[in-house]
Length: 294
Image (cartoon, rainbow, N blue to C red):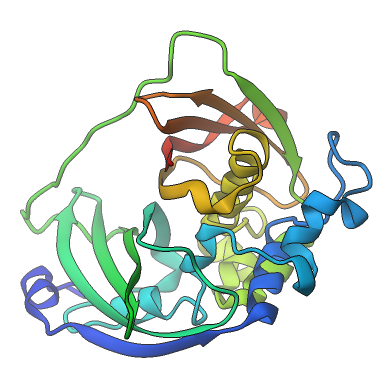
């Protein structure tokens, strides 16, 4: 079996040095749609609020940039850990959480320490849990918790792991926005470091069971956090404390996303979010999604 759960969990932590500057931040922001026209901001390319994502003299850093800082080496390192040997065509992103310990600067260098806390047996699939801690000499920056879903790799009789779902509130959302995923969005987003051909090569996508390339889950993740910051958190990226989601379905470049937001749900200081694809009968995209904020 390509996954040896005991060996993966027992492996020594893997460390790597990463660095980033304003160009990496700007490229990431463009990859999640910054500066692109929306219904609310048809002149987004020159909108002062959007320039905070695209113009170096006004730049701030959306916290989801943590998922690609250093070209996403934490996930790459995790998938190359001892005991793990998987086919990229069978890999899907299952869930993601970022916990911020302090604001991410425009330029930085840090050390990432990656571990595999658990590998769960879901029967017909395995879930690899990856954790990375990113810090510099002044202390921790962020903690990233990632769940990677690997089709066809379960069935060895291991722990199935936790299973919980967050119900949507029984009231209308406080805000609803639509974000269009451009046809070339995945081609731009992948320049931040996720080179999986599933998101660009039709032939590879067909091998994975898709009619055409799909959008990176972490691109949808970034698009959603930006929408929450811009519409509920007064455009202040520094208010975000953590951001968690479960990837519930695929997104195809060229289609819109409907993003619904509920303030102070599931508790004070949080925003619960639902993301669906309205052109496909509101098929779920992101679920169990919560942004905790100051």
